Amino acid sequence: MKLVFLGPPGAGKGTQAARVETAYSIPQLSTGDMLRAAVAAGTEIGKQAEDIMARGDLVPDEVVVGIISERIEADDCANGFILDGFPRNVSQARALDEVLVKKDVTLDAVIELAVDPDILIARILKRANESPDGARDDDTEEALQHRLRVYEEQTAPVADFYAEKGILRTLDGMQEMDEVTQQIRSALDTI
Ligand code: ADP
Image (cartoon, rainbow, N blue to C red):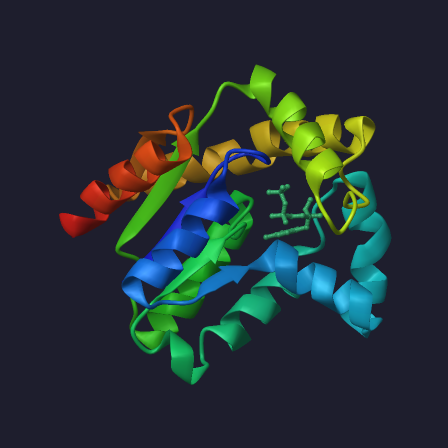
């Protein structure tokens, strides 16, 4: 099963994608995690991405498209994958289409978690305070406001892009975590 998870920062997308990874034995590919690992390791990509991420902007499309197109070639993606945090704008979505066409692969579904934007900042600041690893560089209120704006302007149109293809499933991300998991399972079981 090839899936995309869409949702604003704080929507619970990463948690839900991790649960789907376990339930369906397909890897969760989070571009945010991969970029943070690159920053921590001090690679060229990490150096390029660090400041951009800290202020909540998007790293260049070619960087993330390159990372993902290489990653989905790996053996563990043979049965599918969950893209978490990618594509994040329509041009990444188009680039992904091209990559998948070349591999003769199609996406089965795009799961969008819809959440009231007003609660997101509080949710993330709470998560940041409770995190044993400390807050992320981009979990300041200012960077968060910016990430939410970037989501509205650049990522929300990705949902329309997939709605036109008929594979968008929008679910209510305001429910309890387990309830959201249940909704996702029901949606995926019809595929
Ligand atoms: P969140 O969903 O909480 O904003 P992520 O971990 O998905 O967090 O992403 C963190 C940051 O990593 C983003 O704000 C952006 O700077 C960078 N990033 C992640 N994925 C992409 C992507 N597909 N395109 C460009 N930048 C990305």
